[in-house]
Length: 435
Image (tube, rainbow, N blue to C red; front, side, top):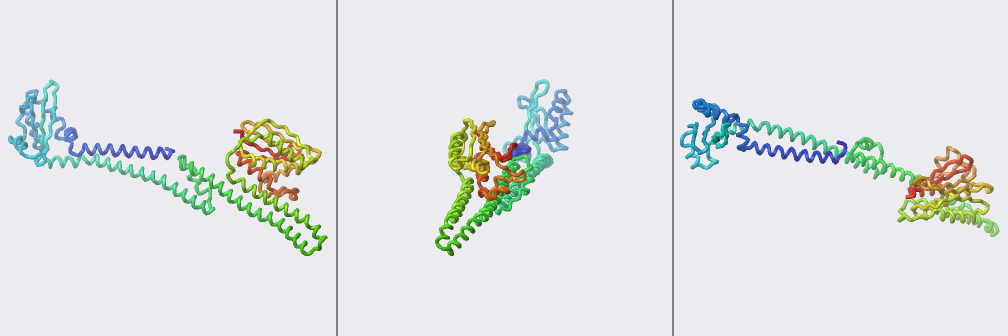
């Protein structure tokens, strides 16, 4: 069985059935009259044979049959008719009935059993058996070997099943515990649960989910460390330029200082813009609250109007369908604004920036295409990494705009695809779910 549920369920009910069955068997085996009458060798076919002799008129043979049971198996037998009258002298001493009447049942030297037998002729007979306790105990020791052996075998089977079930639960838990410990020390290895993930039960599914979670957490930790290193590197450059400009201003005269103020202001603005983008990228991993309906055409018209004010020489072509998505307006606006600014930064003024919004299955697709130089094919895969700038574009921006757009698309449940257009320029395709 593949499912852990069915293993536990089947083991539980198998244990109940075995315990209940052997309890009943042992209960019947422990001195119950019906079991003795059915299985004691001295009583086997005794009523049938005696009645056959008696009704055939062979009274000596019927008598010898009872004496044989007395002599060989210590069994005393009396036979009564329907009126309670003895049909045979029996093998018990004559005052046995009076002795039984006076003595207490547990102090009798024998066990008294009765069996009613109806012959094929319709006559009813009552057989009274008296088996000495010593003979009965000897027979019981032999007759209990089979149920006791079966009980021991059942206990052995249950022990093996319980051991296997216990190991099938505790071993995966130990593996998961070790994986959690490694994850807490940021030393998680996906191969540590590879074997467990091949199981077809709940632990296998849990191991697969844990592997995905561990891989995701390791990736986040690695990206945060890389981001911290990149932030340290990027902040160092404007701070160094600012420090140099301040040192020059300290030694300069009044006229030279006035010439240095624009440079100081420029470096401060660059530093402020870089810190703002870093904070924006970091806030994308925080919980932004509940989603809202966002009218994409209205948002795109607003961003296009803002872009025309900053780049009046640029021309924008909008081809929009009326579509709405569920998301966070500020996050979506920042993502689209970064994509639009990136296109305007590299687009030649004589060519338009093309913006297309259309429905594609259960998603909406936003394409922003410029007519710039595009990006070399070997660098396309790295576009969207924090602080990565393709060669030839290192002087523009900080390499965070596309990273913010990609992270926002992922938080919104979509994706960002960057590619070179067949007719030139870079094509940014933002895919977002409509439901």
